[in-house]
Image: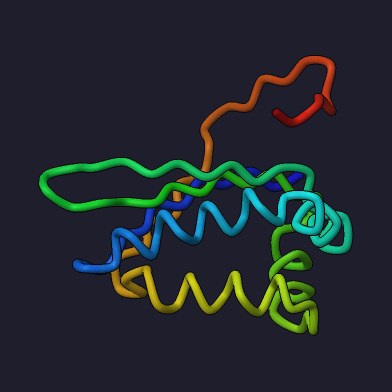
Length: 115
């Protein structure tokens, strides 16, 4: 099981686009959860946070195999995936991504219902 947290800086002036992206994901939550099944991901959690005058997006992922999930998502012809990547490309600074791997994972009674 792969667990990772990404931190990505939202491009200056694209803050409203980042919020629109999260709204898009919420509006299409059911379809998005179907794409997770195809990618063998169990969980994606998005956070937006302001830090030092900039906006950051955090993405927490729990997947059976992150390399596999990325390969399937990249090759997907699903319009939801295409729109998701379009938002990502337009809104996030590709030079300012940080990948954080956990030092410890504790888990009980997984899977759980999403909100």
